[in-house]
Length: 244
Image (cartoon, rainbow, N blue to C red; front, side, top):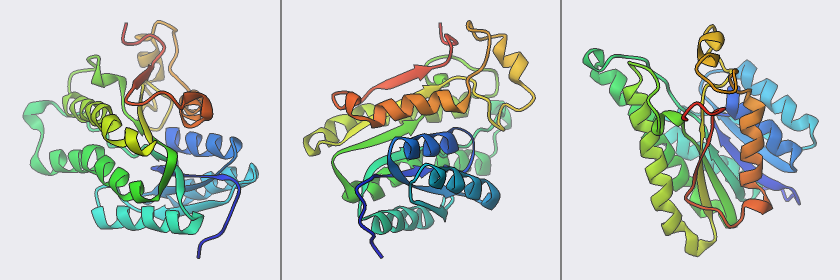
């Protein structure tokens, strides 16, 4: 059932932990009702919902693996129906695999591409009919799209470069409808992916530390807000100077 609200409406694909959870919470602070998707982390999803509600927003969670096309489409449709439309779509779900190219097997390759590229395309495609004029799409890429990361990260870097190219081209396609699309490219960030590697990664960052998820969320907040209304097709790198 659709419920009317004066608050803006956001959907964060992959919003139960890390950067996605931080963005979901920040959008709630900014005055959004927020729906999230998660794969199989009910505890993380509940914590994210609690944080959204603590800031006065309605919160919804849907279990949907971005590699499952039907589940992803159903989650987007359910969020849009519940909120009566969408104003912001954040596509954060991503898969990291550190594998030398000679050791990559077909299931690993297919899964990474299904989540990091196909899942992004399908989420955007599903959300477009529900985004109002002036709606915002934000993808979460990686600074590895423009700078070498480490040996074994070639497939991940390839997938994130594809997202940056997708955003650049879609900006032209979506501009007549008043929808903007932009891509954030974080560097090393304190999430479960980097657990145990903080000091090693920080040593490679000119600012001497890795990012906190809230810092990436702050940039997402600005891109989703009124001051960024004239920007589209951009990839914004936020990595403490890592790519320099």
